Structure formats: C-alpha cells, structure tokens
Image (tube, rainbow, N blue to C red; front, side, top):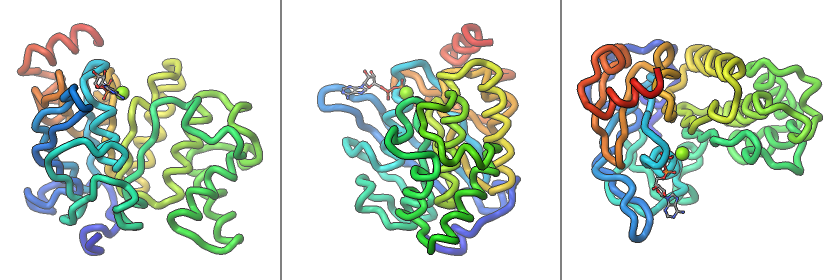
Length: 268
Ligand code: ADP
Ligand code: MG
C-alpha cells in the first residue's frame, strides 16, 4: 500500500482532507454471490480514513457476502475493489502481506471465531506471527498490550476460549485483529449474539479503539438502532442493492427510502 495514504492518522479525520476520490477503501460496481444466486448487485461505496460506515440490512440482504468479498474470502464477484489506490485481489492469498494485515475481519459468532485448541495468548500470537512478526519479547509485549486495549485482564491470556463468556470472546477476537495493526476493521454482526448490556460495552470499546487507533470501520448489522451513536455514515442494503446512503443523522432522522422507513419502524 502507498505509505503516505496508509500512514496512521488520528481520528476524527475530516473526509475533505483527502479529497473526494481518495477513499481508503473503494468499492466499485461489485456484483456477485453464489452460482445461481446473485446476492449483490452493483455495490459502490468508499470508506474514508477514520470513518465508521454502517452497513445495515435485514438477514439475507448480502452483508456477510460483501464482508467476505472485502476480506478476500469470497471470490465469485465482478467489479473492482481498491485499498489506498491499489487494487485488492479477490483471493486473500494473492494480496500483499500489508494488505492482509491492514484489512481485518471480525466474525459474527463469538463461539466459532476463536480456535478452540489455542489459549487466548496462543490465538493472538498466531495472528501476530503471521502478520507483524517479532522476537519472543516483542510478541509477549504486543499480546499484553492488545489485551489491555480491549480491557481484558492479563490473567485471561492463559485461558482456553470455552471458559470465556461471549463478550470476552469477542474482545479476544478484537485483540487478535488489533495485534496485526490493522487500518480497517470489518465487524460483521459482532454484537448480535450478545445480550444488550454486553452489546453496549462492546460498542463503546470499538468506538474508543476507533478513535485511539485511528481505525476505519465497516460495521455490519441488521440493527439500525445500534448505529445511531456510533457510525458516521449509513449504507442501507436491501435485496443486494444499496437503497439509501448518507450521514447517520440524515438517514435515521429523515429516511428517504420506504425500506429504511420500515427498518426503522421495526427496530426503533
Ligand atoms: P446477511 O449477512 O445479510 O444475512 P448473507 O450474505 O449471509 O446475508 O446471505 C445473502 C444471501 O446469500 C442469502 O440469500 C443466502 O441464502 C445466500 N447464501 C449465503 N451463503 C450461501 C451459500 N454458501 N450458498 C448459496 N447461497 C448462499
Ligand atoms: Mg450475515
């Protein structure tokens, strides 16, 4: 990735500083899905540095398919995706080491997201070794640092995932993503399996990290109410197309599309 664009920047970063065409992530005319099932149709959007874009739509609207395309785990699509003005290969293994490091994905389910055979420390170390790499001392320091960033006690490092709560597991998943020093975090329904209070504290954590780490975020959810205090911009996905997009306050305050209106009636 081009280092000048990719350099860490403090949040919040006004979008206009980068000009209108210099989105960190740029998605253009992406259509795709599964063999006989076109899930996404002509999707285009940008994610600017430090920006949190919420991708909202009902279950089945194609959010996870799009997330997996962005991360290089789903290859059946047409269209172009670039990251800091460089094309992103459709297959993760064809992407540069820097690209793989900079785009991280946090899975929906806190119960399958972690390797059940690895301790918390082991899982985070594994991600560190694959991406950043460093000697034993640097590795230990990196793990301890990300655990504290996600507000988990250091003692939890030697636990196995099955001993953790859902919220703790998602924090470990976030720590594992952070240890790679990402620039964009794609969070796919990361709070859906959690109860309301745990949801709120996880959202707060993500919001804090976004600011302190200068992260961009694609926050995928079926729950429009969740994004109100958190996202800069909302993209509404219905049946695989974008039906509405705009600043969060504008979309939630005065939704233009009937589908967004119905989503709001159902969730707020
Ligand atoms: P969302 O995350 O918004 O709930 P998904 O991207 O998971 O939506 O799914 C979008 C559509 O793709 C759904 O209609 C679903 O049935 C279909 N789909 C998901 N996975 C597969 C698969 N492995 N094979 C065929 N169709 C699939
Ligand atoms: Mg999904």
